[in-house]
Length: 304
Image (cartoon, rainbow, N blue to C red; front, side, top):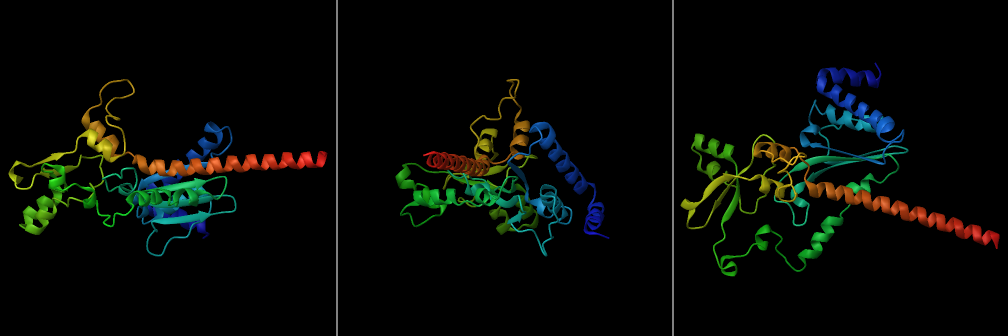
């Protein structure tokens, strides 16, 4: 039994889902080559998914993704897929990396949202420059300046400077609260209110996130409520009311807005990748212009 037959056997054991993944990518490749790009492949392809793709199908699903893009055999990791990696061939390069939205954007997003991103370069070996570039991190360090305490609390005004009481806003874990109440465990119950410097948990398509809000000394006046669609848009790095209207100009109901935002990609993460692609394409154009200029100079020298 050759390697491909072994893969097919594992596909059958893993279920229909893995086979569907391979079929969909095969169809995508055909469309990209014959329908969308006039028999030419695109320069870059970006793929995004939840971190569960690392373990789906007994870790075989992610391997199928890598092999479908690269048309080569990819060895399985001994324990688990790393949060970052590379597959390089003679004429291509593929890199993947887990990006957490809370570390991107300006200002940074207040949402913990980890996603796998793959950048596949059909025309060279530039995906690592796009996906692993430290540009944004350097930009933030310059703004920090002489501030020694990098904790988020250092960016908040105290009571005296603000001139008024600042409410506590904390992500609220309703399931954890119920579990603590069920067990009559005060520690678990209190921890369900989170911490003041914690980011919000990942937005889900199934239901909106709750948070607690109260003023010190007036806890009885506090409340626990759901995030509004506009607040969810801000956590995704989108403009206010970005999802309020459909293509027909009609107002979209809140439940549909929550669902689309829970399934969306955090905008700062996309900007991080697209800015890297733009830089590489501009660099390519500059190098081509320099080459053309050098050729013209050589022609002039030979003519003279």
